[in-house]
Length: 492
Ligand SMILES: Nc1ncnc2c1ncn2[C@@H]1O[C@H](COP(=O)(O)OP(=O)(O)OP(=O)(O)O)[C@@H](O)[C@H]1O
Ligand SMILES: [Mg+2]
Image 1 (spheres, rainbow, N blue to C red):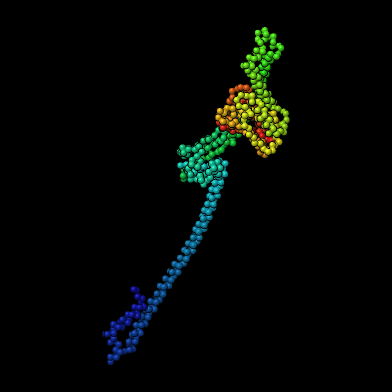
Image 2 (image 1 turned 90 degrees about the vertical axis):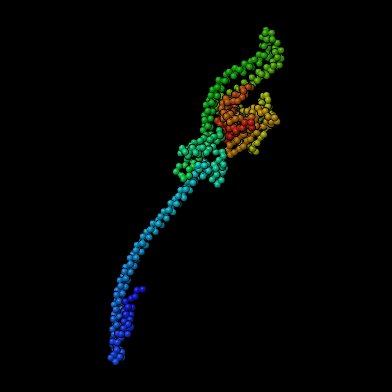
C-alpha cells in the first residue's frame, strides 16, 4: 500500500522522538534532571512545522497533479464528446441509408408482388390451357382454361401427376424429357376428326431452379371447322356448277330413254290398232304376248323404268332450276304442314319400294305449340324432307336386328329468330369418313337402282338450305345406332 508523504511527515518526527526517548531525551533535561519543557516544546513545534510544511508542499504538488489530471480528463472528455458527436452523425447517416434501403426493399417487393399478380392474371385469363409440370410430370401450374376444359380445379391439380388429373392428355413423359434435353419446344397436333382439334406445344423452362416444362394447349376446333366449312362451301359451289352442267347433258338422253320406254309400252299394247298388222305379219298373238309380259312382270319393269326416269328427270330439272337461281318469291308457310304433307307423300311413294314400307316406321313428333311465321320456297323444303325421309327409309331397311322397331323422330324448335329441325332415325348410321362426304354431289353408298343412289339427294338439300334459305344443315351419326340431320334456318 502506497502511503502519502503527509503520513510519513507526521509519523517520522513522532518515531524519532519516541526512539530518542531513551538516550536523546536527556538533552531535554535540565541540569537538575527536570524536563526542559521549553526546549521540548520548541523541538516538537519545529518538527510539527516541518511536517506541516512538507504536507503543504505535498498537498500543493498533489493539487497540481490533480489539476493536470483534471485537465487531461477534460480533454479526454472533450475528445470523447467530439467522437460521440461524430459517431452520432455517422450513425444518423447510416440510419438514413438503412431506412432508404428498407423503403427501396419495400417498393421492390411491392413491385414484385404486383408483377407476380399481373403475370398470374395473364396466365389465368389466357384462352389456352396452360399447364406447368416439373421433369417428373407433377403439375406446378394450372390455369382457368385448364380447369374449364378438363373439369379439374386448381387445388385438385397442383402437386398431382399430370396423367392422373388429366388422363386424356396426349402428352407423354417422353415429350417432357425430349423438350428438356433438346431445350427446344415440341409441337403436337391432337384431333378427333370432325369433333376437336388441339395444337399442343411443350416448352422447356430454361433458367429456373427446378427443371420443368410448360404445356400450352390451343383449342383450334372452331378455326379448323370454319376452314373446312369454307373449303366445303367452295367445293360445293364448284360441284354445283359441274352438276348444273351435267344436268343439261343428262336431260336429252334421259328424255330419249323416257320417250323410248313410252313408245315400247305403246307398241306392245294390244289395244293400239297400229300394232295388229305388224304382229300378225310376224306371227305374234298380241294377247298371248300380253299374258307372257304379265307372267314375267315386263309391264312392271317398264313402269319402273319410267318412274325412275321421271324421278331422275325431276332431279335434273331441280338442278337446272337451282342453277338458274330461281326467281320466284318466298312464301309464308307453316313448316309443320310441309313436314306432314311430305310424310304423307313419302308413305305413298316409298310403299312402292321393296322391303320396309314407310308406313311401318314409327314416326315420333316433337313440335312447338306455336309454329312461327316461316318464309321459304315450299316445294324446295318439301324436296329436302323427302330426301331425308328417303335416306332414313333406306338406312332403316338395312337394319337386320330381330325385334327391331324402325323409328323416325322429327323435332321442330324455335330459338329466337331461328327455326331448328331435327330428323333422327335409328337406322344403320354412318362412319365419320362417310359423314364428311355426304353433302357432296354424286357421293353415294347405294347401288343405283330404281332412281335411288344418284348421290344427289343430300347435295341438293344442302344447296336448298344454305343457298336458298340462308341456313345450314349438318349430320351427327353413330354407326349401328342411327343418324340425325340438323337443319337451322332464319325464320325470315
Ligand atoms: N339417314 C341416313 N343413314 C345412313 N346413311 C345415310 C343417311 N342419309 C344419307 N346417308 C348416306 O349418305 C349417302 C349420300 O346420300 P344422298 O341422299 O346424297 O345420296 P343417295 O341417297 O345415295 O342417293 P339419292 O339420294 O340420289 O338416291 C348415302 O348413300 C348414304 O350412304
Ligand atoms: Mg338420298
